[in-house]
Length: 266
Image (cartoon, rainbow, N blue to C red; front, top):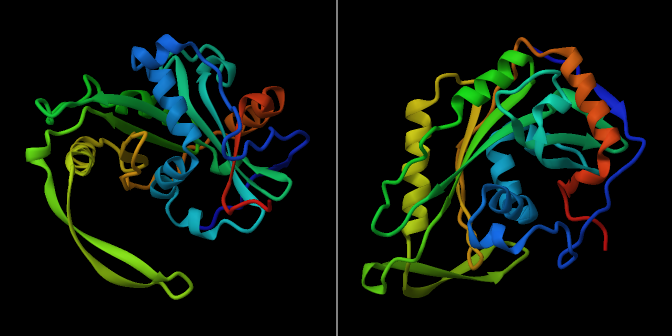
């Protein structure tokens, strides 16, 4: 079925933070305590990793996004600011609103429930106490057009004697993608194992195929490819919700991050 996108004009835009610009300030102890908001904000500020997550969740739409497009993302939005008296979930961990040129594509708005999974080498089978699907289903029931769950892994490192051989490839011709074999090296592949195991659990427990799922790993040193399945459009999308999303954006646009689909001009 073809859906006519609901778009509304953008009257104000958040600043575009470039690499190295300060973006978000929060207490140091949030980082020390591995606080969910701090880790979620780190994911949001790592625009390449966040973009890889969104690629998995948005499906074909990601590849169809035109030039001068992207998404505006706000973290930890109180649910009641958009839906009166909504207390479950108490907040929307990521509110993602695509834009094309000077219009918000509110009909593609996605609400995301985030769960942090604190794994370790000695406890690689760690899973969250709750998957987040009940919160996601509640948002679907309220009429959000797209809803997803992200499980974000963090962990310590594996001991070096647990590292495995990986083959290295060197790019020799960037324009054509020509590459050559560059030998083998030992690497800690536990993050890849955690992502794959987490994705398997998400697929096995997802109660509704409308709910998109992503398993991802947060690291300060490396970027690991997330695994996921896209969110499907809610057939019971509420037009009142779409209008409320637009109103929330324009009242709080400075709280959003601009994530262009394509590299912006310097």
